[in-house]
Image (cartoon, rainbow over all chains, first blue to last red):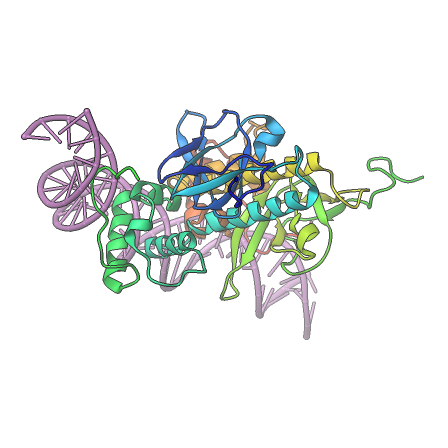
Length: 189
Length: 189
DNA sequence: CGGCTTCTTGAAAAGTATCAAATATAGTGG
DNA sequence: CCACTATATTTGATACTTTTCAAGAAGCCG
């Protein structure tokens, strides 16, 4: 008996753990629907440097440009543990309705990403934490479930030092759980 | 005889001059294709404040979310003189290919908008000026063709003062034409 | 253990925001 | 036609936030 959480005419879900590379710009592959987790997108600038270019959350479509261009335009990295399924599943061409939804979602998360660079450091980090936690989870957030400081710094256009200081003060205020993130190389989960 | 610069089965182009409101969030209307000019998108936050949420340039689709939701999600304002045509033109439903292109364009301009908030003030303003001028026009840019300082400040997450100072120094360097923008209420063109 | 990576923290420096005022122009109404 | 108002840009002095640079602490891994 096959598992029942995805249709039998689709490929199985793909897992990506925190920090893992999902695909690389100019590489080939399918588009993806994010079932859970959050993803960071990066664009390679003129000088070959990769810069933050967007964020994708649960329910978003990832790498839709490959359906048009034949290759990915951005590099995708998992900000948290992710589950992805190829998109569109069975049909070779997505239908107009789902494409429209993907388009509307893309514009919403664009506005979200821009908003993550508004205001002072405290406001940005707070907004990012809220976005990653999802509006459905108002309970206190553990520091363990957050991305690396490097990722959060890139997303908010702050430095690692500033993000660290901000998180520490958020912990002091009780917004975050009073438990420091373990230092050192992240453990392989 | 009808004009020949657009197909007779389409509505005529719409003009919007610099600073003009194109449509309002929660209002109704069609989606638009930008034939020329640049547009600023704003989202109303929780407290009712409007914040910058994106930029749209020549060739981009504007307000596609109205095809899915029935109303606009953002407020659109002309950053420069614009010409728009309803989209899709004759067909009631856009085809998959053009939707995919709109989706890819949306992600590209999302990355562009995020990049406008990277680096110091000089880098941001320089990038914005380059984006609005288009890569096809490497010649020197007149100060008259730029949006208002208020708009540029909102887009780059700087203040009006800082944008002004940056533009003045760019004029001194010769990147911009050495002609100051006229002060006072913008003339209605 | 030693090397590597990540997070934390301190002090000084740099950049931008803030506040305020001056300048300049378009539109309005007398 | 001319004050008068409203809006937009420029500029200066100061205060504040964040960056920078540096070092230390803490965990993983070979």
